[in-house]
Image (cartoon, rainbow, N blue to C red; front, side, top):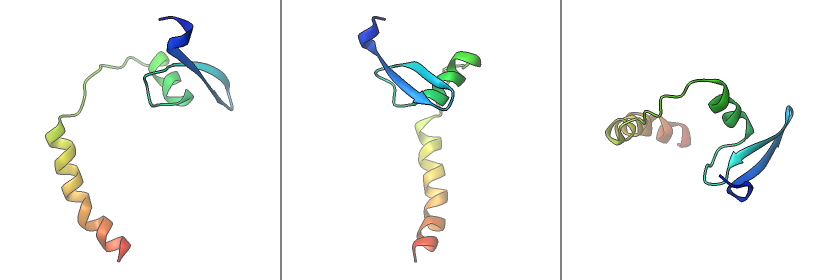
Length: 63
């Protein structure tokens, strides 16, 4: 990747290059670089089921 494909993120540990197409910041980028990440994504059905389980609690807090 060329330098233009990155943005500079800053935190208390300094500056870090993060791919421009990623939405995460410096701390997550450090984790990606330091830990083996499988690339496995949670299935969409699991995420929807989790949202359905958490929705009633969210509504209770709001009311």
